[in-house]
Image: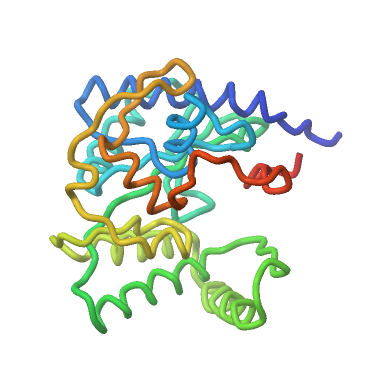
Length: 248
């Protein structure tokens, strides 16, 4: 029998449960996070989910994520788990496979090497590892050049387990000890390339997201402008209002 796919309202309901659990534990332990990407935009523009969004995006520095990783598995609701199984991005998901379509992604701010060849090689290494870890790629979305690059790195990664590649990815991501230049080292290709600075996320305020008081950067307007442009408050054309991860 074919498994029933979750509807978007069902995904939103599941994500709210995940976010409540995560925020409660972060508040309990003083772990700093903030809403990011589409979730931050949703908090500002909709006071909750962008109606067609299908995941939650959170941002933590490497140090804060290490604190979270140490306590969350011990204190989370037993229906949830922090997993790294299918991606280089840590996710909170439901242990029930039927609810696995709903997940919370954790983007991690890591220090970036100084500008120049070291920085270029560092990004190249992360991009290569992402290609090695990709599964079920829809090649129709890419140019011929990128199809060759993604296909080549995929083949390069076949001899190695996902666990091994994930360890390599985390080691490379965290190898720079300090820098005023930061990036979301586990973001997708374009998202990773944004260079951020500590002061952009240093001060946080709370905004409601689906009735949950969540931390956001006090400089949220600056962050959203960098991510989406000055007109981020204007929704995209209806043809672009589609869920990223679902075929619904």
